[in-house]
Image 1 (tube, rainbow, N blue to C red):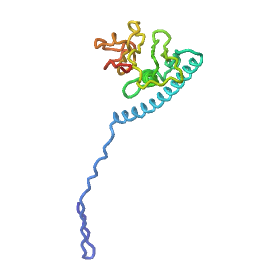
Image 2 (image 1 turned 90 degrees about the horizontal axis):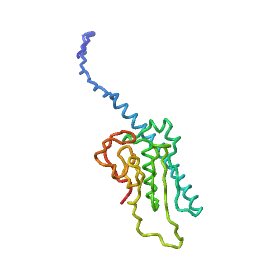
Image 3 (image 1 turned 180 degrees about the vertical axis):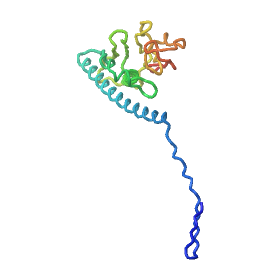
Image 4 (image 1 turned 120 degrees about the vertical axis):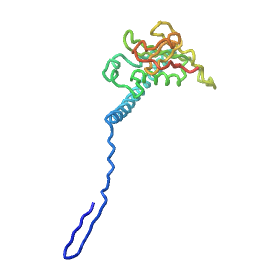
Length: 208
């Protein structure tokens, strides 16, 4: 562009080049939604972890109470029906699709395995009263007895399968987290029989 001016014989010419200002990239609405989803899932996970911590405290309290009664097995309702019936449990899921029920149940199982019980049985009673019940067994030990140097094997932990209703080695359905026995959890099963979600894989629930 050019601009000229003459006054009393003095000529002034001004020239400039128009500056092209790059357009500010706009965020797509889908990306905005994705960011909000990620934030929500992070908040949900914090809530899930807080609930898991509270249920682990309950497990420890109940087991200690039973141990002081001279017994070696505790049956604890780790996820009661009234919690699973709430809107929070039905609607909140993590980014990988895991529900609060499957996430909390999985974390509780892992924590119980780490505590080295003699046997662990998590039973999903969703066909009756919608509770998740843990049966935890340990053995009486003399305090003078040395702790075992090797961690006990955990491969014999079982569940009562919700499909065949037999007590067998457990498999966890991925990604929903529901459990079936190893015999029922085969590639022929394409959808979870409990939530009807697509099955990506079957995972060993307990360590060998």
